[in-house]
Length: 59
Image (tube, rainbow, N blue to C red):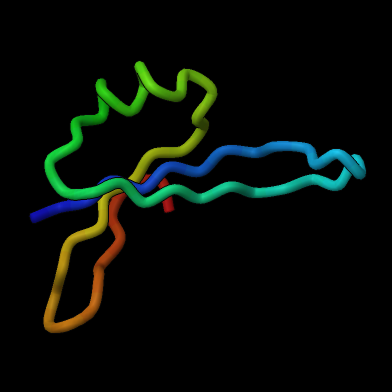
C-alpha cells in the first residue's frame, strides 16, 4: 500500500535553513495531511516495489 511523503522548509533556532521530510504511515489521505500541516509545500507518494520504494509525485 502507498505511503505519503511531505516536504516542508523550516528555520532552526540558530537561523539555519532546514528541510523537513515526513513519511506518513499507510492509509493516510492527502486531505488529512493538509489538515494536520497546512504549511507543507511538496507532496508525493511512495510505493513498495521489489523490496524498495518507488517515489511518485513532486519529487
